[in-house]
Length: 146
Image 1 (cartoon, one colour):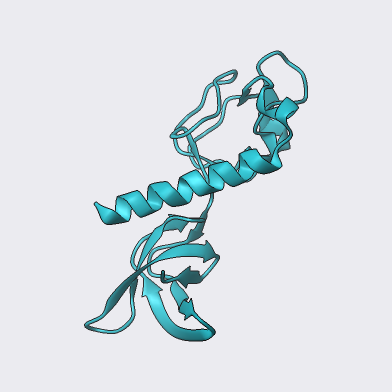
Image 2 (cartoon, helix red, strand yellow; image 1 turned 120 degrees about the vertical axis):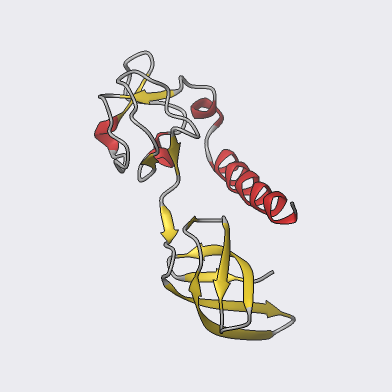
């Protein structure tokens, strides 16, 4: 339960960060839609995203570039979660670096990710035979313990 709330906080933080850096005019613009039919697993590019009214601008275009289609998406369908998701930065069974930092002290370990995760999501890391740690994906191959 605690892990789910930490993941939700991370997603809310990323959303708030995006909204804080996006001009108000863009936030109130039309939603982004698929410019053409998209297959599951497609990484979205500029050509895959359009606005509902046909103009080149839509509210979340910059955030959607690089996102991955989680299912088949029809042309003209609004692009939003869970149909699209951020790209995975850590894959299951990938070697990762784990670090913890507090008051000028930093501890680093090597481990293996137990699950795939996008940026800001929860990752379980197998450090050795008996120890598992939980952290947050902050970059490809890098997990921070809080």
